[in-house]
Amino acid sequence: MSDAATPPGTSSNAGTSAEHPWPVRTVARKIADWIHRLGAVWVEGQLTQISARSGNQTAFLTLRDPSADVSMTVTCPTRLLRSVEPPLREGASVVLHAKPTFFLGRGTLSLRANEIRAVGIGELLARIERLRKLLAAEGMFAAERKRKLPFLPRGIGLITGRASAAERDVLVNVKARWPAAALTVLNTAVQGAQAVPQIRTALSTLDADPGIDVIVIARGGGSVEDLLPFSDEALCRAVAAAGTPVVSAIGHEPDTPLLDHVADLRCSTPTDAGKRVVPDVKEESERVRQLRDRARRALHGWVDTQARLLEQLRSRPALADPLGPVQRRADEVALHLERGRRAMLGKLGNEQTALAAVRDRLTSLGPSATLARGYAVVQYSDESGNLRVLRSVSEVAAGTPLRVRVADGVTHATVTDGYEEGT
Image (cartoon, rainbow, N blue to C red):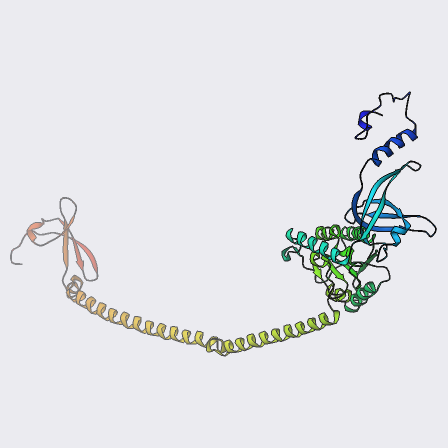
């Protein structure tokens, strides 16, 4: 074998090659020699299988790590297995003292136990308490990380034992409260060595389903050992990491596995879970009816209030007789218009009278009135051709054309005689 394949504590043999390989028996013997040099160890785990046939001096056990998918075969004398009190059964937690053993014939590794101790209830409870404190310190029990369940989930996932009372309680109560609820049931082991891996697989399946809005993990009551899977650290962490709200309905009211603290909602019993995940259709129908009645009364009250307000507005003078103010304003406008017309006519009459008086005075004082009494205005043209009033006979000579204006018109004359004083 090469150095890379040589177990610790053994020396490599440079003589092995493709042309000179070791036989299987040699390799098996060397592996056995190396393993047999290992000392005995104390191992803790959960028994998943016990095979102790009558007449057989050797009992075969399967020891599983409850927090990981790892198991080993354990052999022990049958008398040693039967000497343990209380008698061991599958799913029991044990601590055993064993030495690794390699069987050449089958090439398998197992543990040879010479002492087996069942883990007592007190020790189990102490371990659960230590795990409780650890998870609480990590904040997995904090109220702020818990999610609120939907009012009416589209789909409900149920993880429980096959044909169990817990399954029946959940289904009956859910269907009684909301007949149209859609449930997906995955049956798993709810106690024993296979409970935790099966529940985790079912949880992963339902959590990946987009049609599931809430997951219920339910189991009936039982002893502390029966409920141990629901205080398993791996299961608690899986529930905390789930994206879908999880409801824990394990056992009865006094039973409080760690799953109750990690889940988003803890129900005292599976029956209580059936009542908490869906509303009661009768209660909701009654609530809808009450709300409808309240809405109807509120609407009627509002309509009545608005009707009274409109009636009050209509009874006001401005709306009771909307044309009255307009008519009154029209009458006022007509009155002022008549007053203005009379004032204007009076003013015009006064002005006309004054104008007539002024005109009469002007007429009496003007040249036209003088001309009407027999006088005339005689004009002549000067050297520039402008008309000038004749004021003296000396201003014109014989033959000068004259313009004579009398009351009813103008006539022309010519000077024929010269100046005569006194005529």
